[in-house]
Image (cartoon, rainbow, N blue to C red):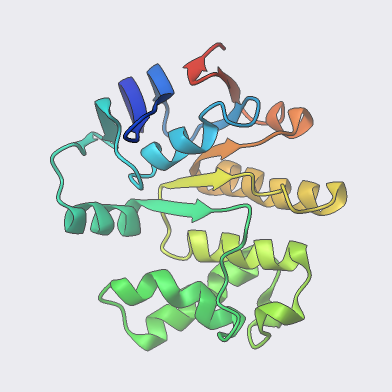
Length: 221
């Protein structure tokens, strides 16, 4: 589902060159739930952004669902992300002026779907995360765990084949974090969604199919 070949990422300024990722080779199978761990600054989020086509590598090739991505235009990349990928971040990135249902519908505004279809899909996604009774609430009326559930609903509303989650439980207590992980596990097991999750939590990582560790931009496990 995701193939990374000899991925390197270098950040350059006028005076400093920083190697963020070095010779990453990784194959992620369809339906796999993969965790990525490592100390702060080791390149975890950079790797996830490259998988999500939010950032491009300095060297190497990315193939997602047999689609080569290096020659796609910005418009084509945006369309590909909207169709194939769902993103979950540590900070929920909800729009406070929009109700829950409207926040979840946002990715569908970039598709040729009707208002009725958007509402149906958003309601279905909220049901999956246990928030069908919060559709008219605003984000500031929700707990942290509920906000992250809304973010998950927004990520899955377009029925993506791949979910990329960057520290999805990082702002939550252990109980809420376990609930969020359970939702991700259900999406993986019942819907067959491929999930890549960056985490600092060893216990959560060991509940996934496979664990990859990074250190100073290199894969060590």
